[in-house]
Amino acid sequence: MAITRKDVEYIARLARLKFSEEEKEKFASQLAKIVEYVEKLNELKTEGVDPTAHVLPVKNVTRPDEVRPSLKREAILKLAPRSGEGFVKVPQIIE
Image 1: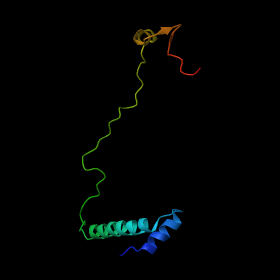
Image 2 (image 1 turned 180 degrees about the horizontal axis):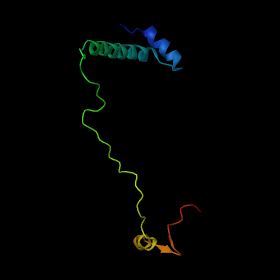
Image 3 (image 1 turned 180 degrees about the vertical axis):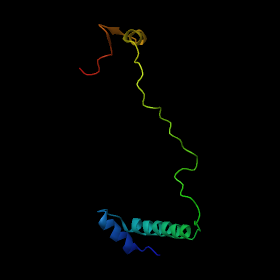
Image 4 (image 1 turned 45 degrees about the vertical axis):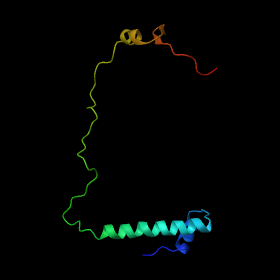
C-alpha cells in the first residue's frame, strides 16, 4: 500500500495539523515505510503461538493487603529531624 502526499494531507487535515511541502514528502515516505514493515509482519506465520504481553515472566510484586500494627508515634518522632507537640516539624515552604 503506497502512502501518497495526498494521504498525508488528508491525515493532517483530520488532525488539524499544518505541514510544509517538505514535511508532507518526508512523512509520506516515513508512513510508506511503516506500512511496508507492518505488511511484512503480517506475512509471519503465527498460528499456534501464544499471545505474549511480556518477554520475561512477570509476577505480582505487591504484598498482600493485610492489617498490621502501625508504628509507635514515639518511634517515628525519634527518627524525625525535628519534632514537637507530638508532630514532625517541617520547614515552611509557603510564605
